[in-house]
Every structure is written in structure tokens, then in C-alpha cells.
Image: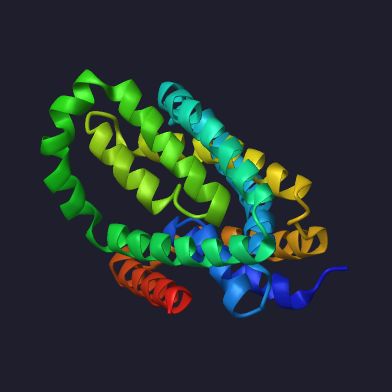
Length: 255
């Protein structure tokens, strides 16, 4: 059965994603946990499969336009796939109480870091790029694999991290690549990552099928609507508001 409350939440999150491009996990998972009282593990597992479905569409578009660096995607996957499997085994071996607490704490920290990355991305990239440049040019594969491992662990545990944090790190590691290729690569990498992590959560019993369908029924028209009107809304107005919301939600989860 489709629950219109969840569908409405999907519309709102999809609208924001369409307007700003910010990953739905940063909004959907804390919304399910804090507003609807969904268990953290169920919220994460359901959101991961929800994200894999929506990001697959974005990957198709970017792939058709040639704005995906499959080399970068492969490097990220070399780190994220093993890290995802290890994290899922750790979740399966832990009690529900410990898992729920760990998800809430890590999710709160990641949301705060995502808010900082969204607000000060240009300054962070400008400061770190020259300092990482020499190491990055000598060992780009190793650093990208390590980045993938970090993202794999974070996304598997919280469904958040591959967007704002991953994109910021890619801008630092690959300053010579066009931004649209980095965006496309980040989205393309998120598809197998969220699908693998979501499937793992499903096998662990932490995916609500009815909730997933309800969210998709709302988010798809929401994303379309947000994308259509995005050119009429200033990013300078939306980004600070969204970053502030992520910051407040992150603090709420921690305290």
C-alpha cells in the first residue's frame, strides 16, 4: 500500500534535489528518522535502494552526454565495493540497538561535514588543492581508491556522503578534469555503491518495500518539477538555506 505521507515527503525531497542537485540521502534519511520515527537501519536501507533508482536515471543522462570519467568511477569502486561489504558484515554482526546508535551519531557528523562542504566548498578546494596537488599527481589511483573506501563505509552506514563530501574531494584530487565530468563520475559511482549497499541491507531485513514505493511515487515528479524550475531560482539563495538545514539536523541527531 502506498502511504501518501511518505509520498509527500518524496515530493519535497525530490523538489529540493531537482533544484539544488544535493543528494536525497542527506535529506531523506534524517527526515524518515526524526519526523516519521522510522528505525535508523530501515531508513538507511530503504533510502539506499531509493537512491540507486533515482541516480541510475542521472547516470544514463551523463553517460549519453559523455560527462562521465569511467576511469575515476573504476578507481572509486575499487575502494568502495570492499569497504561496503566489510561495513555490511559489521552491521549484520551488531545488535539493532548498537547499529541504530552508530547510524545516528555518524549520520549527524556526516551531515554537519556536508553542510560545511556545501557552504565553503570553493574555499576548501582552493586551500587544499595546491597542498594535495603533488601527492595527488604521483599517487592519484591510491588516493582515489582510499576516497572510495571512505565513501563506501559512510554510505553503507548512513546513506550519506557520496554527494557533498565526495564531490569536494574529487575537485581537489582532479583539478584538471571539467566539473561536469566530476559530477557525472560522482553520480555514476553512486549507482553501484547504493545498489550494493541497499541490497545488503535488504538481505539483512532493513528495507521496507512499501515505504520504498511510496517514496519513489512522490520523488520522481518532485525531481522533474524541481529540475524544470531550477533555472529560475538562484543557487545563492538556496545553498545557504539547505546547508543550514543540514547543519541543524546533524546537531539534532547528535544531541
